[in-house]
Amino acid sequence: MKSFLAGIAAMALTAPAFVVADSANARDAAAATAQQMAHPKSWVDELTGHRIVRITDQAGSQSLYFHQNSYTPQGDMMVITTPAGIATIRLKDWKVAPLVNDKDAKLLFTGRKTRTAYFSKPYGEEGTSVYGVNVDTGKIRKIASIESGSIGSINADETLLLGQWAERNPPLQPGGEMQKHGDPAYAALGPDGKPLTYAEAKEVRLDQRLEAKIPMEIFTLDTKTGERKVVVASTDWLNHVQFSPTDPNLIMYCHEGPWHKVDRIWTVRTDGSQNTKIHTRTMNMEIAGHEFFSPDGKWIWYDLQTPRGEDFWLAGYEIATGKRKWYHVERNEWSVHYYQSPDMTRFSGDGGDSEMVAHAPDGKYLYLFTPQDVPDVAGIHAANAADLISPGTFAAEKIVDMRGHDYKLEPNITFTPDGKWIIFRSNMEGEEQVYAAELAKAE
Figure 1: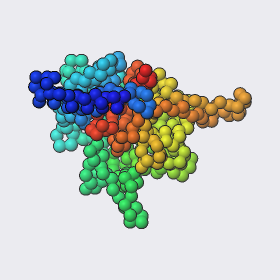
Figure 2 (figure 1 turned 30 degrees about the vertical axis):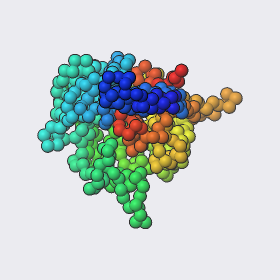
Figure 3 (figure 1 turned 45 degrees about the vertical axis):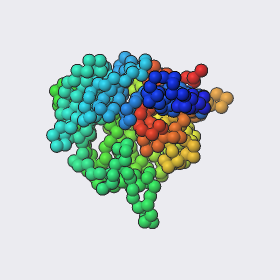
Figure 4 (figure 1 turned 180 degrees about the vertical axis):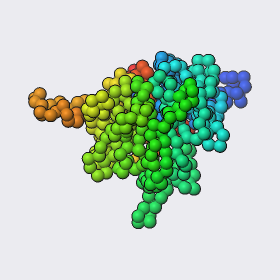
């Protein structure tokens, strides 16, 4: 197909000038046609057989982080960041429309109850103001302001914002430049005095930040009154705050730092009670992280490695019962982030490059995973089987070939509310854009 399109483009470029009145216009039109054919807005991935759609045209457009809700409660619209500010995407036809034309507006998330997208803007020297914008009318209202800190989530009934505050925020890479995607260009020397890889240097900088013992708080902010309440206070590094998608009083957060050193995943109620560790390490160098809630809010899922870089799982914890499920993941299928489909029957994975923790030799793909439980042989159960981890595996399907993607930009997959597409960000064509991939194979 590509060779056919290339041939058509070549014919357009070499067509005689007399076929149109203006030869200069003809050349411009032919060049535009060739460029469009070289970078189509929609195509079928030759390796996977799935349709890919490039939704955005503005370089630097970006979808939200994987666990931040970006869809309206009705499932018809999503919001993204563009170089000009914030835009909506109509999911039935991928139409992009501007919503907030302000480069200082930082998109945070959408509400799960109302058709509101929330964003923040700088306030004072170190403060932040939070606003809500109706995705249909564009009407903006101010929610609250804080003197310092950041907002990371909103609860299920949109009555509380969730934020974190630190007494100071030293740069993770002192004096280092920021990369194009916004993270520091991590660099550090190892014990032997030689430069570490990007991934190992990042661990050094994370550990330095953890050991700084900076006082921090996780707090809620009432969306009507602006009242601020501290939920957790610590000199540990608190991060990755997120509300349950269904329980308005349940928070998940992490103790940030090198994953093999910290007890990362915790839940707590909005009144500060029931501060609960979700995963306990059982071996040295075991890591767990990039945690997220299931769509119904009943499970917590997370990347688990036993030990780091050797054996890979997507682990689940049922909040009400404490039951656990672990699905084994092959090295090449390990992913920076996983996520669960709206009907909770499948998971996505965004793969990773060979420099990441799995050191996968061929892992640069977007995956669709179907869980498969490991049954008891001959139906014979251990006496305490119900109390043990329920193991399983994944049947994996490659959805998008990402071998042209630079994984310093994380794809951050989400499922569309109808479960038929995945949305992700990528630089596969050079500049960062927002894409969709259809989960059903193209005919």
